[in-house]
Length: 220
Length: 409
Image 1: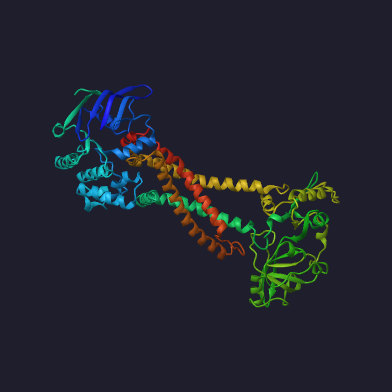
Image 2: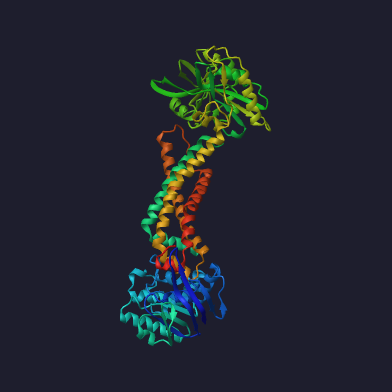
């Protein structure tokens, strides 16, 4: 599904050069549920950003569905992200001005799709996360767990094959965290490839395999 | 379409921002629209000054000597010696500035503006006659006590009934009404008055010897005549005119378009071609006036980048291109400006109606006509784009990861 070969990411400022990723090679096969672990600042989120084409690597190659990404032109990577990748963030990143349904609809707005089809897909995504009754609420009217379920609905509404979750339970209590993991495992069973960053070893145990990072290097 | 819906949703939810922005946009456009309506009322082709592109005017004159300068309207003597038979001119008219006169009519004290004009005046300027007609050149040569009055004066003197043939007293003379015209706004400096009488209808002949006085002239160009040539010939004639007053040795009197003539009264009374300069000033003033609230809106929008960084990051993560985001933010601004423009148009109509009723500008006919609305539309779009482009560009250029983390490089 996604392959990284000798990927590095270096952040440069006037005075400092920071290596966030150093020679990472990872192959995530279709249908896998992979967790990424490591201490804070080891490059987990950077790895996820590079996998999701949000950030271009400083070196190495990223291939999505067997095709290497070159040039990272805005229009091309935006189209790939829209069609193939869904994101779930630790702090949800819901747009407070928009209702639940409007938030979920966002990925579909950047496709050529009729309004009726968009509404049908939004309803289906909300049903999958059990939030049909909250479609007209605003994010601030929901609990943390519900907000993360809205974020998951937004991530899956475009039916991407790859879901990237950056500490999806990090801001939730254990019960809500369990709920979210149940949803993610269900999505994985239905065929979605998932890469999840987590600090929680217990959650990582439930995935197919774990990538461990330390100081930007892959240690396992 | 969804860009528009989205913009509406954002503006509805951000009530305080929307209110502050709308207030600035609406107030600015209101002032500009009212100013445009006033300029339109004063200078747009409309009866009686419905042929400005074929009309040249002389109102200002200056006689200058070593120890004295006299500046004002042109004198009768200057005009009668230089205006007749100008090549390229179809007709020419002389007229004086209006004078405020008080009279008693059927026991009531009435004041009105009275203007002395020649018989050709009615053929150079096309008044809308409600009854009767203009006086003729013979009335001028024979100093016949005749008058054309406007509709409001007819109402005041004769209670609104037919007035032609009736008489009234003004400036110690009994005048017979020969025609009634529609009111002319006092913004029309060349034609406005309540009563128009022949030039010769005056007690003193002193005006006939004046180089600088209280007269103006308007010439109607022949089709195909070049205004520049006519003005040049007029200037030559003025320059060649003998000056019999020992105080003065040079004489200047610019011939210009009606607009140029009016603005030169405020800029430089002795120069011609002031219309283009004035239009530049007007546009600059409008742009500066719009620029301040536009800059304020730019600032407000830029400061909102921080507030909206998460949204920008999310949209980019889910497939929005920089161009799509720029379009969205620009649409929000243009929509804001459009709503502001609409509100400003409604408020302008109210303000103009109030101004018309107030009598502040006598016989004002300020209106939000198609021309004014057209300018309003242009101003609204300029405003929307002016205040939206930079913030939209800055927002759309944010890196998605940085935006999600609230970092801006």
